[in-house]
Image (tube, rainbow, N blue to C red):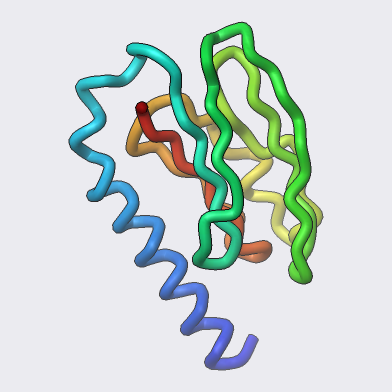
Length: 117
């Protein structure tokens, strides 16, 4: 890895941490009404998906020049079903279901974040 990779990883990490602070006011709304899953690729919002209830299920892939992540929404949670990154740490991460929770695949630069509506 060169110095630019380390810089980009640092920026993405700071962005992920800032998401936690920005959405901290939504903690009181956890479990009430539909949730919104935000998917970030690199540092840009890639997609938003409403999770209307616990019965909603969806599986989709995020493909970028860095790799592919397959994301699954099930039982009111979102998690990385598969990733073609070298370490696969995101696949072993706990599913997210509440505001302020994030899931990150650093090598592919994919961030999942739950926010309430």
